[in-house]
Length: 169
Image (tube, rainbow, N blue to C red):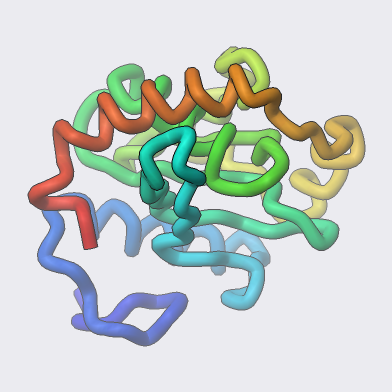
């Protein structure tokens, strides 16, 4: 494995999950995404209502000029990452990121961010750019309510604390 990130060219973190992210980045590039479509370690700091919580996404793909697909890349069970990933997709941007992927590098789930429903499974569930654009066209931008932001922030804060030592960058 290279010692620099495929998308950013920056040195890799020492996280145990970094190989999963690098494999996912390689997959995204192979299915047609351009590096400029993908944000690595996308961050957003929420306001004082959420104690200035810093939200971090492994990968955030933009399509049609807006955040479209959030990817959580981590070893282990996909099911244990679903709630955290969906919560992140609900608060990482001013509008919901409509689609969420959890992947361990060997498998993946594509989730509907609004309700957490699994839409597809397997690595082929990660949509190619054209497919993502079609899916995005069916999902107009949606701003979360203050209550939804609070709820998602609580879920994110609870789950992010479990892996912060290795994951916080």
